[in-house]
Length: 126
Image (cartoon, rainbow, N blue to C red; front, side):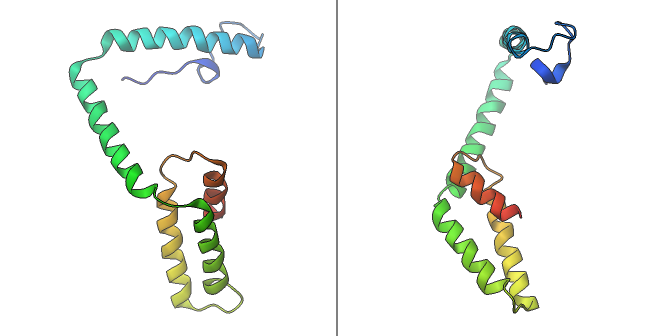
């Protein structure tokens, strides 16, 4: 199935009811290492090629959509909210705003890295 998990999400009960943070960390470390060894043993050339293809596709998409400035985009969002979603609204402006916000949401399906990215993503999903 090629899906592995370790640590708290697995509820292995290795340490019984003793759920100290250090125990959980050690459990994640030990079982994480075991998982890595199993993956290393079972990996095939075809799976490596599939991963490389996925990585290239992901990176290309990242480059295409990561060319934005979060500070500028926040200003643009504020202007959009003021101009299109203010006190006086109409159907056309609401649709335009909805479309623009949907485009921005797509940007944030990619990896968020900075505090500004996360803050802007939170503003957009509101």
